[in-house]
Image (cartoon, rainbow, N blue to C red):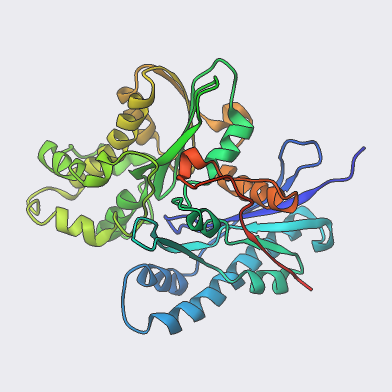
Length: 370
C-alpha cells in the first residue's frame, strides 16, 4: 500500500462566507478527499474585508493588519482540519492557499490582482510549507489571472466525445467548457453568482443567504429591472474575461435600484436570481446547445436557482459534481490542493485559452515553514 501524499487546499471566495479547508491525498494519481472543514470569518474581520474591497483612506495600514489576520484565520482552519483528520503537520507536503481577493482589475493598462492572507503567517502557525499567490504569474503573462479552476476541471472531469460544462457558482459564477474533442477548453466568469442575492437578503433581512432561494420564489421578477441589469457591458464582452466585487457589488446594485424603489423586496430578490440564471444560461447556450452541465460551489445548493437555470438550458442534462464523485462544496478547495501539487512537481496549471496568458506557467510561490 502506497504512502499517502497529503496536500491541503484553502479557499475563500468572493462571497466571503467562510474559509474552506480540505485534506487531499494524491498518492493514487486522483485526488481523494480525506477530510474537510469550514471556518467562519469573524464578523469584525468580515466587515474589514468588505471595506477593504472598496477604495478608502488608510488603506495600506488596514491592508497590512487584515493580511495578517486572514493568514491567522487560514492557519486556524488548517489546524482544525488536521485535528479532525488525526493527521500531523509533518505528513502534509504543502498547503495551497488561494487567499482572499480584495482587488481584481486585470483590464487596466497595468492590470493586477491582489489576494491577501499572509502565507508566511500560515506557514509559521501550521508548521507546513505554503504555496500561494497563484494568480499574479498569469497576469504578468498578460492573462486575467482567472479563472484558474478550468485546468483542474479538465484533468478531473473531461470525457471523450462528451460535451460537458462545469459551472462553479460562488459569489461570482464561472464556467469551464469541456468540448470532449480536440477543441480548446474554454472558461470564464459569467457574472454574478451568489453575491448580489446574498447582499440583498442581508440588507433586507440580515440573513447571510437565501436558503433554497425560498425568498426569491416568494416574489415576481420585474422584467424592466432585469433588462436594465442585463444591459451591463460585462455581459457582452468576449472571453477571456473575469470579474468580481469591483463591478458587481452593493453600491452598483443600489444605483440600479434607484428608479425601482416601488418594488417589493422579494420581487427584487427574484429579479437578482434571474440575473444570475440568465447570464449563466446565455453563455452556456452560446457555447453549445446540448451537453451535460455539472454544478459546484454554494449555488449548487440553491434549489430555486437550479430549477430556473434548468428551464433556460433545455438541451442540457443538469446535475451537481456529486455525480462525478466530487462534493460540490469542496471542489474549489480540492482545486487549490491540486494547484499546490502542480507547483511542487513544477507542472503548469493555467490554460492560456482561458486566461489569455501568453503561455502556460507554473503558478504560485513557496513560503517555507522553517
